[in-house]
Structure formats: structure tokens, C-alpha cells
Amino acid sequence: MTRTVFRFVPFTITQDTTAEPTYEAVCVSGDGKECGERSDEWITPHPVEVWMRDHMKITGHARYRRTFVDYADVTRADQNPDH
Image 1 (cartoon, rainbow, N blue to C red):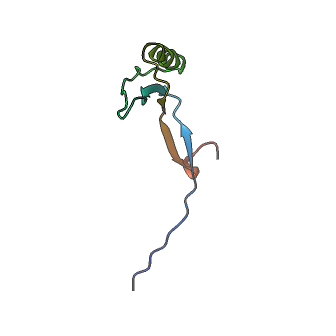
Image 2 (tube, rainbow, N blue to C red; image 1 turned 90 degrees about the vertical axis):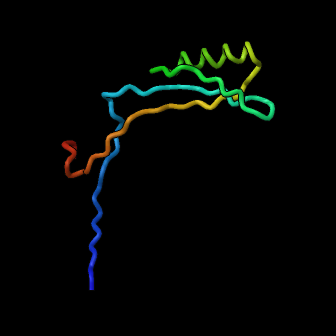
């Protein structure tokens, strides 16, 4: 008979502060087909919001999928110096 022992290992997930997050938007407006125009990636949300406003002025499109991307570190609690 084979025995398996599972042990709970606590861990923490934190944002990696050495890597900057990015923001982006894609226009999903359109009749039957999404527009698909996309903003550039930025390290702050403001330029993406300006792009969405300007795209709406030109096209009348009002629906966007916004994306925020960051990096995460997963650390075992027994290896975390804060614990």
C-alpha cells in the first residue's frame, strides 16, 4: 500500500515592485464586429483614458476593455523574512 502525505504550506503573494505595471485599452464597440483599435501600453492609466476619449470623439465608440498587468511574487511563508 502506498501512502501519500499532503502538507499545507502557507505562502504570500505580493506585487513585484521592481517591475512597473502597464495599462492598455481595446475598443470593443461596433455593429456585429468589434472595432479592435487599441491604445499603446502605458505605465500610468491617464494616457489610456485620453486615448479612449479621443477615439470616442473620432468614432463615437463608447465601449472599451481595459487591461492592467502587473507582476507577482509568490513566497513560502517560512522563507518570507516578514514572518
